[in-house]
Amino acid sequence: MTGTTKTTTVGTLLQFWSRALYMSGAESDFDHARLSDRGLAWMVDGLLVMFLTFLCLRPILWIVGDLLSASALDGLVLVMLLLVSGVYYIGLEAKWARTPGKLLLGLKVVHMPNGNECTSRGAVVRNVTKVLGSNPVSIVIALLMIRASPENQRIGDVLGDTTVVRT
Image (cartoon, rainbow, N blue to C red; front, top):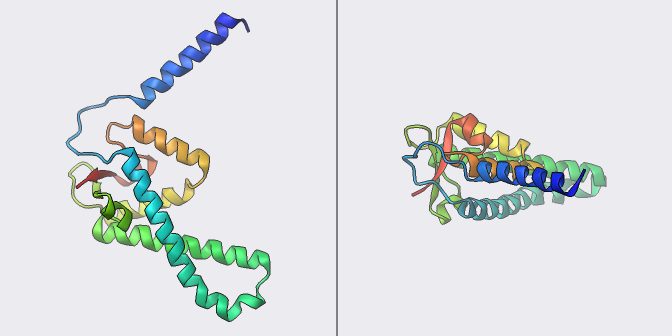
């Protein structure tokens, strides 16, 4: 490959990602949450989920902690983290359309296209995809999708007919 070909290829890729990141669709009727606000809410909620998981594990470990091998303990922590995370996100968003992190940052999850509060189905779908996409590559893809989507939706929002808005 010559220098000119490399430059052209890099330029083409940069133009593609620039269009993807700043794609503009139809005007939205929603006051969408900023990516930074969604990220901060996610971090607050993550800390709360870890704390709640610790609280749930404490009595179990007190009773059977000495009987568990290291790998069994790892498995127990993972299962408890998934359970607490599922109840936390799905339960709170289905009931109140927000988690404490979203409440703190003035955000809520709404149903598309009418803007009503998130439905139970929407809460389940958007959060199951969150668990499936909890690796670094999936997080980057989610960020790109939010930026590229006219309604600021990640894949879970698209599948669950939801979006996150400012209140």
